[in-house]
Image 1 (cartoon, rainbow, N blue to C red):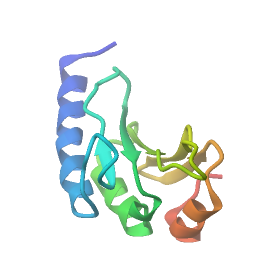
Image 2 (cartoon, rainbow, N blue to C red; image 1 turned 180 degrees about the vertical axis):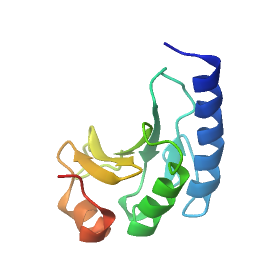
Image 3 (cartoon, rainbow, N blue to C red; image 1 turned 90 degrees about the vertical axis):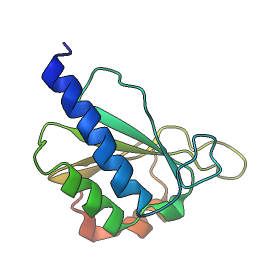
Image 4 (cartoon, rainbow, N blue to C red; image 1 turned 180 degrees about the horizontal axis):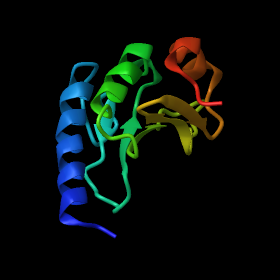
Length: 124
């Protein structure tokens, strides 16, 4: 159930993530940049970022996103990799970032895992 407080938290985190992500790359909703911070609110405690280039992912980016979640332990940020591989979309792969860890989802590519390395605090 959406409440006024939840809506305000969603908006504040959206603005905070916008500032954080812009330090690491260029936003473009059409895939011509590095990422797109989705501006649709689906009513849950998450934000979605479509990553157009795997090179955008870095341990520093993960740490910065986790910092934005410091006071929001129940919130998460889905970094969905949309970059095409061999001409086909990567479909539902990426990582979910929580304040206390990172969880891969889908068939996260070896390249993406290598870029992030062991230091990002993978959830077990």
